Length: 109
Image (cartoon, rainbow, N blue to C red; front, side):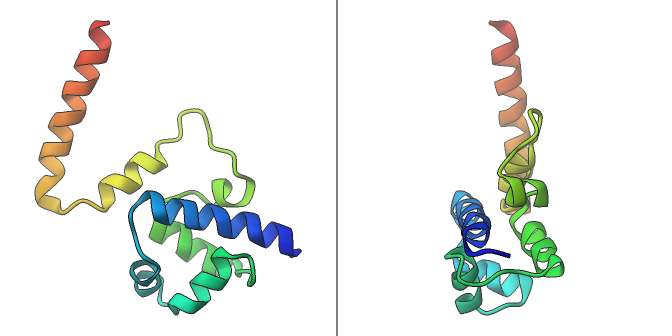
């Protein structure tokens, strides 16, 4: 892989991590790598294997398609799903009620 491709992949991984409000330590612990290695990947200094890409995508709740190409499908809800997976389970019913209220509100307009 060339360096610019690694930089694009790393930037998308970092963007998703920050979007979720996670630290490098959080993600590193989840995917069983060092924070230093994750930092090097995010900066494009190191590439990742297919297995590592899969682990990172699962840990960040994002598709490998998006990380590799930067393109999201028009109905892609992975970012919303990723946010919901970071919630404490006790808040899931509240999030569900909020979404229901939101959908009712926008369907009235």
